[in-house]
Length: 298
Image (cartoon, rainbow, N blue to C red; front, side, top):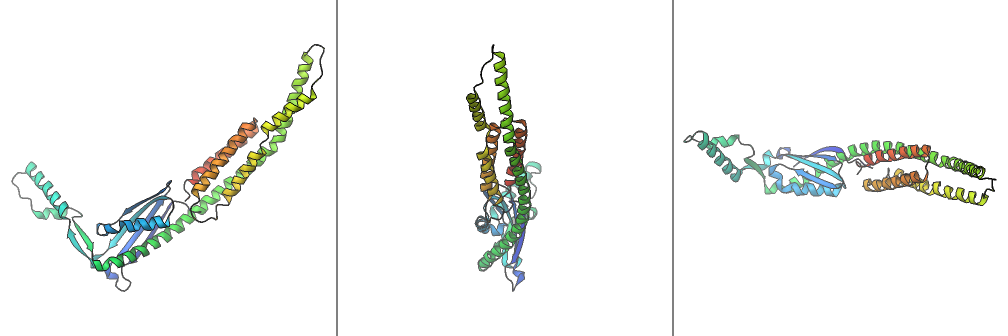
C-alpha cells in the first residue's frame, strides 16, 4: 500500500565518460487524485521529449496527480537558436510603444536582449539517443525516491487505518452483546402492557401467551442483526488484508468502506436502542475518517 503523496528527485549525465556534455534532472511530485493526471514541464530545448516523460509516468503510476519537472544542462551539446516569431512580435510591441510615448525615437535591436527566452538551445541529432537514455535513468532515480516516500506515507496510513478497524471491531462486539438485553427489555415491556390491559378490562381476562410469544419473535427478528455484523466484520477483514498488497488498492478500499457504511446503517435501523445508536454513530464516524484517509492511497 502506498500513499499518493510524495516527492522524488533524480539526475543522470548524458555521458559517463564526458560529463561536460551535460545532464538531466527530473523532479516528481504527486498528490491524491481520483484518476491519473500527468503534467510535464520541460525546457524549451527538450520540448520534443515531453511525451516521453508522460509515457514513463503512466507506465509506472496508477493514480494521482503527477507533476514532472525536467531541468537540463546541455551547454556542450546544444546551439542557441533565435525564436524569430517571438522576437518579431516583441519588436513590434516595442515600436508600438515608441509611437505612443516617443514618436520618431530609435528602437534599437539591442532592447531584445532583455526579453527572456528569445533564444532556445536545440539538441544535436547525435545527442538524441544520449538524452533519451539519460531521461530514463533520471526518471527511474526520481521514481525510486518517490516510491520510498510514498511507501513510508502508506505505512503510516495503514497503521492509522488498522487502529480504526480495531475500534470498529470493538464497537461491533458491543452492539452484538447488547442485542439479548434489548430483546429481554422488550419482552418485559410487552408482558407489562399485557398485564395492564388485562387489569383495565372489567372482570379481567386471560393473556394469550401464544400471541405474546409471536410478538416477541417478530420483534426479535426486527432487532437481530447478526448477518449485518458478520458482513461488517468480513469487510473489516478484507480491508485489513489490503495492507501487504502491491499495486493500486485505493479504489477497492473505497468500495469496501462504502459497504461497511451500508451495513452500519442497516444495523442502526434494526436496533432502536440508545446504546446501540451511540455505538453505530461511533462506527460510522470511524468509517468516515477511514474514507478520508483512503482518498490518499494509490
